[in-house]
Amino acid sequence: MKKLLLLAVMCLMALSMQAQRCAVFEFKVQEGISEEDVEGVSFVFRSNFHPSGYTVIEREQVERTIKEMGFKPSKITQEQMISVGRKLDASFIVVGIMTKSMDEYNVALNAIKVETGISEASDGASFERYAYRDNVRMAALRLAEKIVSTGSVVISQPIVSQPATKPAPTGYVNLGLPSGTLWKDRNEAGRYTYDEAIERFGLKLPSKDQFDELKAKCKWIWIGKSYKVIGPNGNAITMPAEGIKQCDGTIDNMGSNGNYWTSESKNAKKAYQFFFRSSKQKSSSIERCTAQSVRLVQE
Image (tube, rainbow, N blue to C red; front, side, top):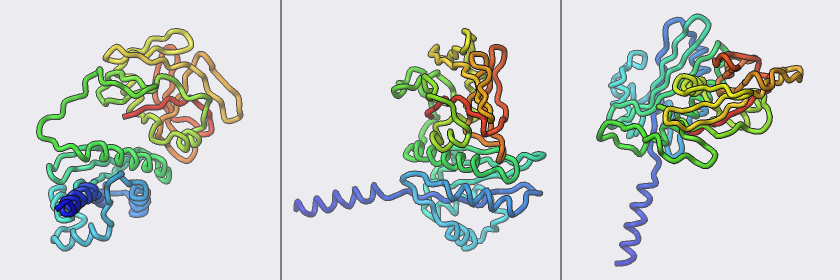
């Protein structure tokens, strides 16, 4: 009897440990974007999208199921994608839209829970042609993290924002931001080029949107060589103006300007920074070879 009970418990544990499944669909594409561009972006996304605890269903299996169900790949609707996901026993489906405006390309990504048909995680990337690798890779990694954090949640009522007083991990500060982003209480030691920062810190680097939220939702008070940034809940961090190390090694504007890397690349030569001085704060692009300050975040 004990052996049977033990076997039953082991079976239940094995079932509970089975990986959930996730299906990635081909991106919807705006007219005028080449097949070469779409394939390149799709390849980078799929190569970096690996949510922990999930099995990403093979592309060929998704395409075969679409045809078996009588849907047209080029005209498939979101409702039909959800039906395909249900047939594949997927917990989530990932759908993307790729658009172009002037010389800038944009990819919007949504992770939709098959059970409810509701988008529970989203992300995206903007880039110039042939400069998509870093931004699409980071978007894939961020979306995978978001799916893992929401995958076990069954929505039975409206989502309620976390209270502004929720505890933050050691070294991070909860500013009460709408996104829930937690900001580290100090800079990383030293300065880093963009590629060094990406290699070392990866997903912990803030996105442009996170810096823009910090600017829009917080009170910025210049206190001489740094800003005191006060969040909606009254908690604060200090952002020192540590200047910038130019590509030729010259260090400029210490004590007057702050230059902080975001996680987002613009092209092969430039990436996006968050810049400030006593009279302004803004996001802008700059040469990747410059060495700048780094402030990390947690979502």
